[in-house]
Image (cartoon, rainbow, N blue to C red; front, side, top):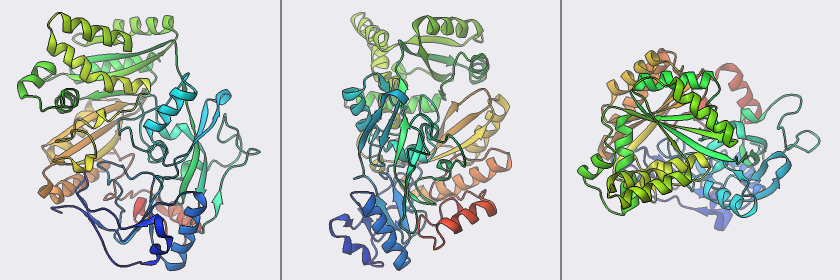
Length: 490
């Protein structure tokens, strides 16, 4: 596992027939520290070409691993679950269009990135915002949604509908206007969109995505304090429907790592430990970020209610883009340079809630100064677990993770009054990749035994939950096991 890389092999020569679509995969490390034997990477230009690749793969019995852009950082990047798969990179299917203002929806291809969709909306429909994640500006909007990513405005898979899919026999299936309306993906009958990830039963080559209409007030509530007090405060806010979008809660270790990376991005140099401590003094308190959208009077009223129900010791700050910029300027003029630097460094993170994608969410990776996270100085494995909005469950989950791997950090995402996710990262030196993966496997199994299954999986993790029904669906749609073998037990 040391020197993790994509390894070239000479098997499966048929993809060379596709000429400019085919290339040998690049070599080099990947963030999660795994390696696979990958004979070819194909970059088909359109859906018809994807179907041609699938038909050829079926004739030769060659497994395919489809990726939207291959930036599944920490979960496997573009690596397949098994050796010998030909990677089908859909980055050239990057169309953005068919904006339907009346239904707040847009048609995109798997190659369309968060940055590209954001730029499209700014130029053509500034009244709409994209539900973005912290996965990076150049990650696929469609791919992230298909793999059940969590955006700052809600769960991404709920934004997606009207999937266009290449099945394992090369058939292209797409919903007709007589069946699917742009305002609702499934007016009647069997819902099939939720069957698909970007790998498993078919290759998704297009879909519609719902947009968020920008509001008069677009603000963020930042909460700081003891984890239990924060959780109780936020639970009351969700119960009262004062907060409805996901809230991201970072532990002190995550905040310090993030602060170091954000200052490096802001200043273009390595900050000293003293500078990080001065700008991000959190040593024990957790930090939470909760979006508030709506009419100004409604947001004002929600803010007042949240303040009134906050636990003692929880500090609340109300942030808008205008207020953040003015505060940073005033602090700079007053000589409070560390406080000003904190605000300027945090601005890209807060702006994720306003639909502005960036690479700032990756700043907590060790040695990441921008560019390709696979080239970060140290490795990282992402994992996750589902639990209730409950302090005891959270403490149990955190104990399992820290007990298995000391160099870790966690973010807690509250989705609603009933459900919370723990997103954890195991940080490791490259030679320790095998031990880190073994630890992550132990974490997953321990959390499952406690009733906290993962909501999404990396390439080295087995779903273990599909059962006979999932096997029957896979057998019917992909009887030769061509598409993404080994993923989700298929």
